Length: 174
Image (cartoon, rainbow, N blue to C red; front, side, top):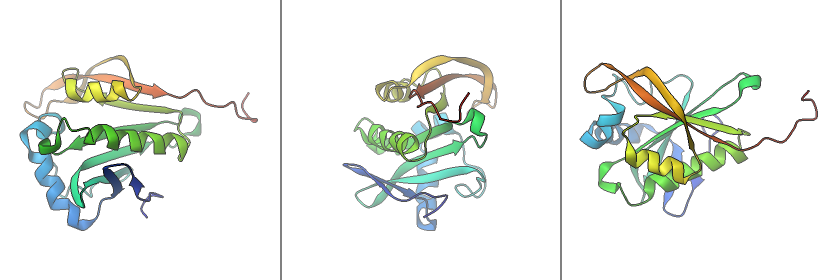
């Protein structure tokens, strides 16, 4: 168990904390052109250089197949989680990413108490946007010049998306 995370099981995928044996495979996947296009090159030591991000390996048939990560806002008055994902390109268009993303979203809402999930993606990342919208995320708007383009290093716009589950009113809330 890491950062309070245990294994999450779906029909075809398992999400579990990244272990040392996953690192080389995840680095190779992140370097695949269809993944690197959106994620960019990994910094030295990745994965494992994150301080406040939870990393979960997506495992299919016992082998790493991608990564889900999330960050949680610690301020109780602004509580939400920000999520991201990649899947090895050999498994694209097979529903693996959709299943993995659905698992982590359900966990963040049901088990970690988040009513709001956010993510940022490139406005032209149609495959990812389709998955996010399928899982109930809506387009909030474009954040201008908010992320570096992995290929060019230039600032690019991002599409901000969110999924909100109306929270129960707390007995202590005003």
